[in-house]
Image 1 (cartoon, rainbow, N blue to C red):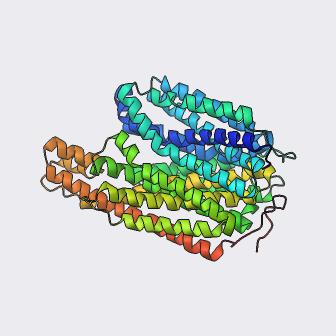
Image 2 (cartoon, rainbow, N blue to C red):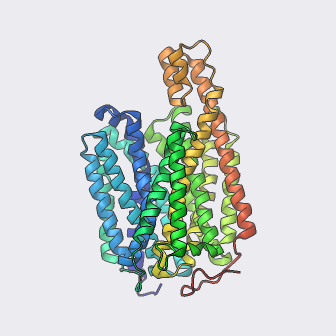
Image 3 (cartoon, rainbow, N blue to C red):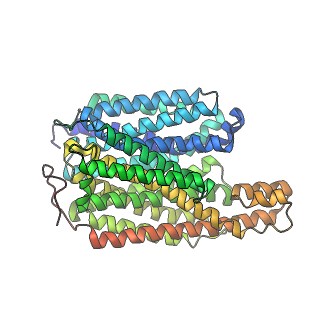
Length: 506
């Protein structure tokens, strides 16, 4: 980055950061409004689930083709289009009259996010290089993290003072700020010699990923052995195998899968996925622990998650400085190790644990995840030629989103499998006994309705025990990642932006 362009590029980075804050923000803000929407629109449980899941489904499914398209037609153009789609979908959701309309609008938000994310990260390769790019990546990682707790914090406030549609309207000023800053300061960048369009690859990748994520989303509810889930997994396997074969044999593929021959790209992508698995897993169990065991409302829950995000921001910043001195492997290895330590500390949690102890291990885990994500994402960008960075980063982001969804599904199934065994329903009427084993929310509702404080206490103990199993599973994943990184990730690779990114690395 040259000195003359430094101010403009920093303003451009600010615009890119605002864009990713909007994405993180929208992942969590809907959750606090689901009870109100269910009442106002008479939405059943299935509809509420799809209001949440439609976003993830389209986001993960469209990243690969959209990453390639933004390389072809321009990252700035793709980002502005994504922000416009995001704004339009937010308006549609705010004024929706039915659950179906909200689901469709949330799908539109996923489409917008799938345009925004690869455009944002790929633009960094046109703005920054080396240490400056690593610092810019850490800023974006922090921006993604900051948006997550802001969702329930601002959503809780809006629901206390306004109608539920405002949780979608709040996107508009954020998107407008990002769009204006990007339009004024972000230079256009694209592949000067783009390959021909690959519609077969685009259809196969989108269909395969959407089908796989659908199976992952449905599995915790229907069971992993349900006919629908098994059929979707088989279909996804066939589609993604076909996509892989096509991309490896097509002369101008949508995504060059030979990128995975590059060890830095491969392990950067894998480690970003493992960190996302742990982050989404923790964000699945931690809010429920805070809300139900510590009896906090949605607003206070969001505030109590801030130590996790503060740790993430600090970890990303420190790891970035370490990356410039040692390369990517050392901070990633340290980040995964710290994440494991924080998760194992969390296994010491009891129903009597103070919030101070909980905030401490949340901070440690957040620090480790931030210290993993920032250098892992930069490791990917470092070996990508700038003209194809949108397609390359789309691979990593697809792995992250899919890994996060898989983490929630697998860990949610683990939570569901271990929680009911610890609830004693002896003496409860049959309907109450069945309901009480479904979740901690259901158990507490039964205990409140029947006036059984002992059942409520048992629910708290059962949830903490089940959460510990989830934390152990996350720790096992991050430990395996740390060992694999130590054994297989290159120690330090010189950056050569013009070299063939698929060249074997020593």
